[in-house]
Amino acid sequence: GEMFVGSDAIALAPMTDRITYLDEGDWAIVTRAGAEIFDARNQRANRAETRIQLDATRIEKAGYKHFMAKEIAEQPVVIADALKHYTAADGSLHLPKGVDFKGVSRVTLVACGTASYACHVAKYWFEQIAGLPADIDIASEFRYRDPVLSPASMAIFVSQSGETADTLAALRHATGKVAQVVSVVNVPTSSIARESDLALPILAGVEVGVASTKAFTCQLTVLALMALKAASDRGRIDAATLKARLTSLSALPGVMNVALALSEPIAKVAEELAKAQDILFLGRGAMFPLALEGALKLKEISYIHAEGYASGELKHGPIALIDAAVPVIVLAPKDALFDKTVSNMQEVMARKGKVLLLSDAAGVEAAGQGTWKTLTLPSVDPLWAPILYAIPAQLLAYHTAIAKGTDVDQPRNLAKSVTVE
Image 1 (cartoon, rainbow, N blue to C red):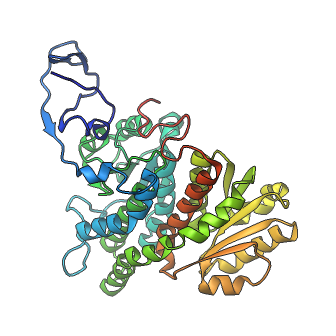
Image 2 (cartoon, rainbow, N blue to C red):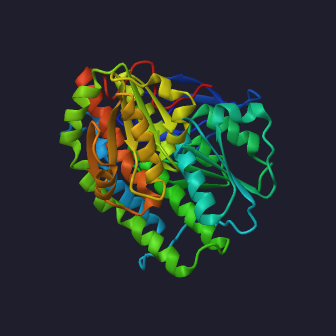
Image 3 (cartoon, one colour):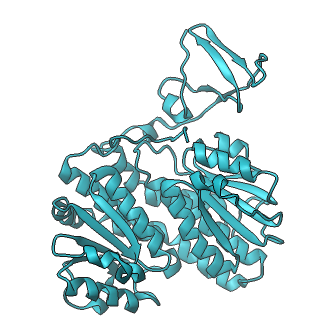
């Protein structure tokens, strides 16, 4: 016989579909013959065996050079799957009955890494769409600042694996102090899901590449639907506007395919980016956390130093970094804040900085001359632009890493599931 030990069920999927999850404090003696499980009091314990169902094609490259490339390309399909799961046949919102924002006075969003940037985007949505105050916390800091949690608040914990140690510890800290603990996870049998009052799966499917891509956009999609539900529950949005928002959100899978078609021109730009030692990302509003995510993706897999900033913060320090050797990637759909972002771009260009502008056709035209390169994306509802613009940000990181010759799927020093604090 054979027994396997892993921190994530997906890691064991190629070997077995039979999984036993340990409770907090459990330990086990594992031999070829089986496993003896003991609880935190050193008493023998019985833990149920679960059979996991995974499509084998989801853990193969399927003709792609890297898992990351495959997972970027899968985003239109998995986003459509998530939208189908959480909307009814008539296109109306259909979240689980337990998702109820009536009486909720505040939401607290907690996560690590890429998931924390999804939370940061969602903060804009909860406040702009639903008028609901929202806090965001990095999970590793959450417990140690003694957060003031209200019994009328909802705490939302976001994790791809559902096993992130800091996020799990933060969840346990919040349990009993808030009205409801909700998790947004990709693994519905994970520890974070099991210890939540309610778990919402993001339905991204298996994500093998260490740098998260499709899980990020699926997290955003589920959080967007939650913000719309909050707006509806709180009377901040009428039926017609809700339907229009859902319609524009449901259009994203189609326009994502247009964004994916930019892979070749992005690869050419990436050949130049690969020569840089430092790269800056700028964004305003909900595009600011996407700038943070774009910088994280780039540094994770290309090992180039990259930083994301709110565009308006440029003159408060980062502009000192600008010279002809520092590319500045600007994420700026033509929205209400666009003109302010153009002003920041002009500040960069006046100092011989190289601006790579990602915008829609109207934005590219309005920006005028002087940019180093432009990438034109489809026009979408400005609310949902961060979901669409995640794709070119991911492709820029991917192709830059290819140009640098780094290990795209397993970058140095990183792990897919971070199960230690």
